Amino acid sequence: MTEKTVPVATEEQQGNSRELTREQERFLSPPVDIYETADGLTVVADLPGVSKENVDVRVENGVLTIAGKVTHMSPGYSLYKEFELLNFYRQFELSDLVDQSRISANLKHGVLSVHLPKAEQAKPRQISINIE
Image (cartoon, rainbow, N blue to C red; front, top):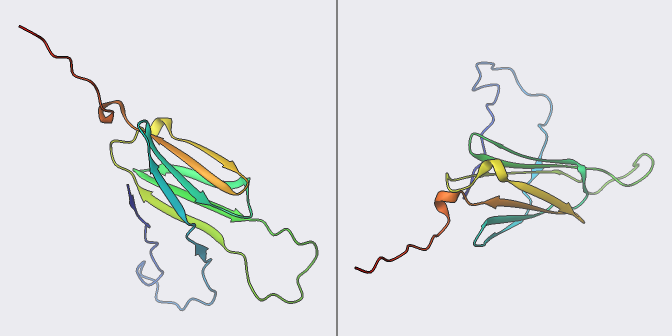
């Protein structure tokens, strides 16, 4: 599994040469740990401030995408801010050895766990020996 960020075409690449007047939305790349078990891979990502309703885990064209929208917990209108909470976004390219139809995810206390089970053909198997 390799990390992959799909590039977004800019207006200049799309044929428009007009100047951008607003900054595009920025994202943080969440830190992840990837573990391999006998059953498959487990991706553990830290998404502090993201609720279950605001996390999006999807697989399209062999690319696992993790996106999380941070909800601001402070009541009222902010008069002064020295930092801004950014949303999370990260992508990984999956191999054919992952059974994409059985991928599952769990979010607990801001930690997302995505289980990527191995496809049956990728699992090790015991080969019987015939004695003649």
